[in-house]
Length: 239
Image (tube, rainbow, N blue to C red; front, side, top):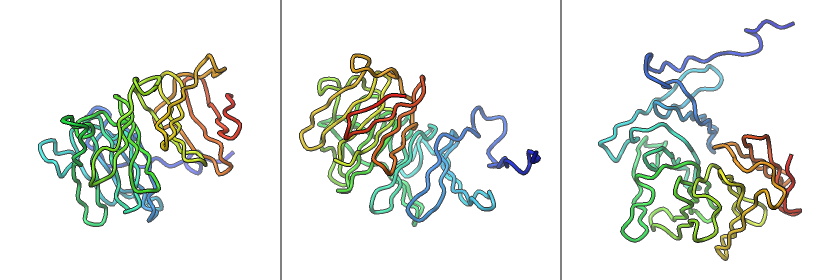
């Protein structure tokens, strides 16, 4: 039997001691340049995976729009321009990893700032350069620099406003895990189809960030009762 020290290694992130949940890692993200980023309750860290050393630390400065707000990081994704989009409980931030700059996007739906202060739960880049953002108030589709393209809520057919995760299938439909089942959104038409127990879905409450798109086209969503495997070409199958 191998010694425990040969099986796993605990990495000390050097976060402040005595701070509640400071060392809690909520997100692990590898960007297009193969840099490893950690979203924590304390801020954003860049990690050297070989040595375990923390290369950079970015903490919150709530009074500044060029920093993280006072909130733990709940989602990380990257658009084609290599910018990272950092979701927190107090809004979305764009991060330029080259110049190490944060910025707060101006994303308005009418007079409402839909992403600057919203509880951001998930994000999904679109091949056209736009971004799909899952919040505690529904889905927002926006083009950086242009603003909101469309917001989706219960009136549009969402089974819940809590969007824990999002994936894209081979036909570019958006699939999302919520606390009331799954949904499929057709970006071309804006049509939403929800899936729940009435469709034979045993798992209706899904978990944040617990989603994966397989190379074979299958979509995996983790929930409170296991994993639901979606085969978009066959509709879906639950396990």
